[in-house]
Length: 377
Image (tube, rainbow, N blue to C red):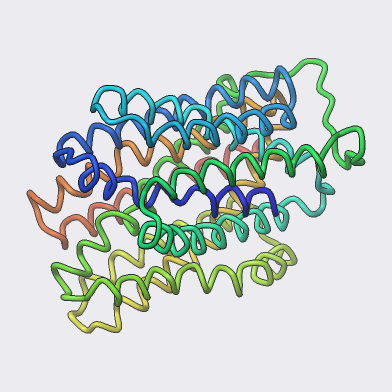
């Protein structure tokens, strides 16, 4: 969790990437859009490759080399200025950086006790949220006082520090493995029908969820007249609530007689409802209620879906299973942002929120279908 915190706080280039590309490199918005597509495609390929490499070499080596090489790539990125080479460099960077994700999930499964899996996932999410909160704040200060060059250097060096910290504290020769899984006849994740249905629901969940980080801020500004600082406070509230309440909430929910899929259904329903209620009134307070519902849904859906994926991965090649889980969210990033903006441009905000909610309903129906299949099995 601490290594994840260092890594995520270090990836402070990411929130400022579009600003850097438009202001420092003077790229048009169309070119920035193409670069961000390369970003998403690299993330998808990296997740797939990370899973394959984890099954071949184990999570420890993949995590170390992903951190170390992505650190070097972040430093190298500041010296590239032409559009074509930036596209290629961002694509390669994300392949290397996101190979870390499936390896982390497999390592998480290995380094934690079986009964602690869901809470272990929650702790990692806590580290990610803390990192994403601290990183942009620190990044803004670095840009103000040093410039973008300093941002790339700090970003790259923090990844390298995380790699060597991992080498020091998680070396398999020094650390007791708590839940190593030996499977002499592993099955392919791509032949596991129920798991593929689960992955499809995660793509749908991601599609609805990521609107809060692309189209919703635009809605706050254009339709509801919020300032940048007010939008920032609303988004900061999300991270603060997760930091304070997610661990005790998951601990409580684990004591309830409900399956992981039931919790996922609740989470997806809350995120979908948070969009519907935006159309119900012009009262500004509804934006806070919507953010609270989305945050609660996120806190429930992510840990239990991640734990479900790790449990299912014991049936086969763990890296491949966890790579598919990461790919689900990479795929939703590639399509969700553009679809949301196009829908708003052509049909308006109200239609877009209703459409996203209907997509969420499809995900809930798929989860109910999955629950029925698993009950039969």
